[in-house]
Image (tube, rainbow, N blue to C red; front, side, top):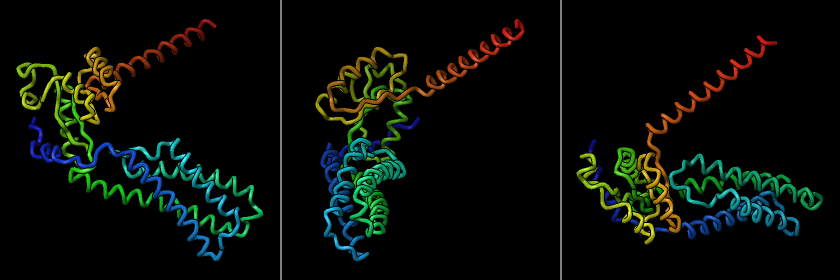
Length: 286
C-alpha cells in the first residue's frame, strides 16, 4: 500500500483562508434567491405589458418570497452541500420551489379577480424562477470547486484509527480536493511498533490529542475508522466530542458491515423457513 501523497497533503494544509463561513454563505444565498425572484417577477410583468400597480401583485410576490424562505429553511436548502452532487442540489431546490408554488397559487386563487389578467405572467415568472434558482447554484458550485482546489474555503478533517479503512478514506480526501476538505492527519493510541508498516509514518498523535483539536475548534470533520469491536473507545470519543463544533462520523469496516448484512439475510431466510414450516404443519393438521 503506497504512502499518502505528502505533496498534496502539505498543499492542502497551506490553504484554508475562508473557513467556518457557512453562516455568511447562507445569508448570501438567501439574498441572491430573493433578488432573482423579485427581478424575474418584475421583468415578466413588464415583458407582457402588465404594470405592477395593484396591491394584489405585490401580495403574490411577497407570498412567494416568504413561503420560499420558510420552505427552504424547513428542507435545509441553505446548508452546506459540500460532497453532494449537482443533481441533489437541483432536486432539493425543485422541492422547495414546488411547495412554494402551491402556497403562492393558493393565495393567487383568493385574489383571482385581481390577477385574472396576469396568469401568463405568473406562469412564466414561476417557471423562469426555478431555472434561475437552479442555474445560479450550479454556476456557484463550479466556482467553489475551483476555489477549493486552490485551498480556500476549505474544512479541516482528521481520521481516528490507523486502519486500512482510515487510510483509504484519507487517500480519497486528499485526491478529491474539489470537495474542499483538507486532510490534517491520522491519530491512533497504538505505539508505532504495533501499527502496520504502511501506517507507522502516518500517525500524528494520540486519540486524546485529536479530541483536543476538536475542542480547540481546529478541525471541522472527525472520521472514526476504528474497528467496530472497539465499541468502548468509539463511545468515549463520541462523548468527548459531543460539546464541540466538529462533525463526527463513524466509518464502518467493510468486512464487518458485509458480515452483518449476510447474517441479517440468513436470519430473514430462517424466519421465513420457520413460518412456512409452521403453516404447512397447520394445513396437514386441519
